[in-house]
Amino acid sequence: MLLNRDDWYETSRDLDWTFSYVDPNEVFPASWSGAGDVPADAWQDWEEPFRVSYRDYVRIQREKEGGVKAVGNALSRAGVFEKLDPAHLASAHLHLGGTCMVEQMAITMQSRFCRFAPTPKWRNLGVFGMLDETRHAQLDLRFAHELLKVDPRFDWTLKAFHTNEWGIRAVKAFFDDIMLNADCVEAALAVSLTVEHGFTNMQFVALAADAMAAGDINWSNLLSSIQTDEARHAQQGFPTLAVLMEHDPERAQQAIDVAFWRSTRLFQTLTGPAMDYYTPLEQRKMSFKEFMLEWIVNHHERILEDYGLKKPWYWDDFLRSLETAHHSMHLGMWWYRPTLFFKPNAGVSPAEREWLREKYPTWERDFGYIWDQIIANVQAGDVPATLPETLPVLCNVTHLPIGGACAPHELAEHKSEYKGKVYRFDSHISKWCFDVDPERYADHPTVVDRFLAGDIQPMDLPGALAWMGITPDVMGDDVYDYAWAREYVNA
Amino acid sequence: MALFPVTGRYIGDHIPHLVAADTDDTMDELAAMVARHSVGKKVPVPPGGPVYDVYIGGRRIDPGVTLGALGLSPMAWVDVVPRGAEAP
Ligand SMILES: [Fe+2]
Ligand SMILES: [Fe+2]
Image 1: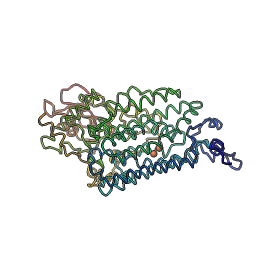
Image 2 (image 1 turned 45 degrees about the vertical axis):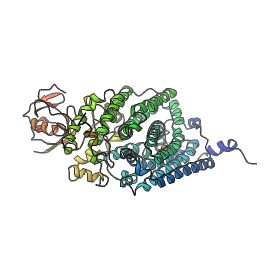
Image 3 (image 1 turned 90 degrees about the vertical axis):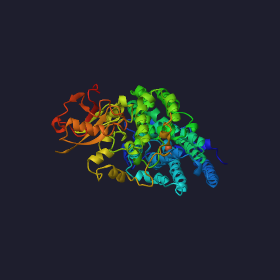
Image 4 (image 1 turned 135 degrees about the vertical axis):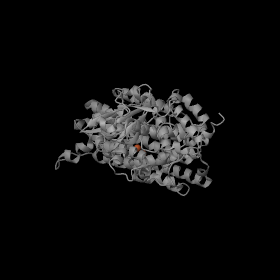
C-alpha cells in the first residue's frame, strides 16, 4: 500500500540523529549555524508551511521550465527583442549584470542551510532553495547568452562580478557579506526575510510588470517564473525569526535593521532608476516610491508588528529618502555614464519631468536646477561639460557615492574613526551600521580607497575605467543621444 | 609640497568629489579646484563671478591660507560657496 505524503512527510523531513562519536558543536559549529545562545531544542519549533517533497518539487519545476522555454522559443522566432525600446534595455542589462551572480552566490548560501542549519526541517528546505538558485543563475545565463549575438552588453551577465565596476562592487560588498560570509541565522534574517521576501517582490514583480508593458514578454516571463521560487524559499526567514524572538530578540532586531537599510540603498540604485527613468513613460505602472510604499513599507511594518519587533530607529529618515535618494543615484549614474556597462536614459524630457514633479513634489526643488544646467550645456553643444573629470567619494558601508542617499540641501558629512582610520558614509544610518559592527566593514576598501592607495594606474579617469573593466563596446552613454534635452529648445 | 586629496563639496551639487589638491594650494586655489567639477556643470555660475569661500568644519578659512597649514587629515570634507554667501 502506498502511503500518502502526510503519512511519511515528517518522518522523512525531520530525520535526525544524536551524535555520539563526535561533539555536535564540531558538526554544527556556531560560526556557521549561527545558533549562538539559542538552546538546541528551541529549533524544534522551527516550522515551514510548504511541505514540499522532492517528487513534487521536480514535477512543478519541470513545468515552470517548460513554460519559460516555450515562451522564449516563440519570441525569438518573432524577433521581438529587436523592437524593444533601447531605454528599457538598460533595465535588463542592469538587472542581469547586477543580480545573475547574486543568484549564483545564493546557491552557496542555500547549501550552507542544507549542511549547517540548526534543524533538519530547515536543512531539508535548504535543498530546494539550493536547486532554485541554481535554476535562477542558469536561467539568467541562458537568456543573456541567446542575446549576445545582438548585444555585447549581455556578456556582463556573467562578466560583471569578475570586474571592479563600482556599482557591481557595491552589490558584491553586500551579498559577499550576507550570503557568503553570514551564518545560517543571519543569512535567513538578512537574505530570506529582508531581501528575498521583502525586496525581490519589488525587483521581480515590478520589473516584470514594466517589462511586460514594454513588450519584453520573454524577460517578464522569466522574472515571474523566478519569483515563484523566491516566494517559497524566502519562507526560511520567518520560523528563524520566531525562534530568535523567543531567545535573542536584540540580535534579530539589529540584523534586520541593518539589512533593511543596506537593501534599501541597493534598490535605490538598481530598481529606482529602472522604474522611474529607464522604463518608457507611457509604460510605467507605478513610481518607485509608490511601489516601495505599497510593497515594501506596509509589508515590512506588518512583519515587524507580527513578530514583536520595533520599527527601525531610522524609519522616518528612510521614508524621507524615498523622495530623494534614487533620484540622486540616478543623476550620479547618468553623469558617470562612462563608468556603466549599459546606456542609461536621462529620463528628464519635458513630459517625463512633468511625471516626476507629479509623483515627487520636491523633485523640482531638489534636482531640477541641476538638470537645467545640464540641459543648457547640451543645448550649447558642450557635452564634455556634462561628463565627469574626477571620482565621487564613496561610502565605506554601502560603497555607493556620498550624496546618493539624500537631496543636495540635506547633504552633510558623516564619518567615524576606527583603529586610527577615518571612514565616511552616505548617511547617518550607514554610519550607524558601521558603528555597531565596524570589523565587518573596515577591511573592505572602496574604489576611492583603492585609487588613493595607488592600486589604480594611471591615477586618472581613463585609468579608473580600465581598472573597472569598462571596454569601448559596452561603455555607457546617453541612450537617446541627448534628444530629450533638445526638446526644451522651444519650451 | 605634497599631494593632498580632499572631499570637495560645492554647495548645491548633489555629491562631493575627490579633489586631488596639494598642501601648497591656497584656499582660493582649492576653491577653484572644487568648483571646477560643479559650477557651470551642475550648478549655475554665481552672479558675482567665479570667486569662492572655503568652509571647513563650519568655519570660513582665510583665502590666502595654504591647505598644508591647516593640519587636516587626507580626504577632509571641504565646503565651497560663492564668496560672501552664507555659511553652509
Ligand atoms: Fe534566486
Ligand atoms: Fe532566492
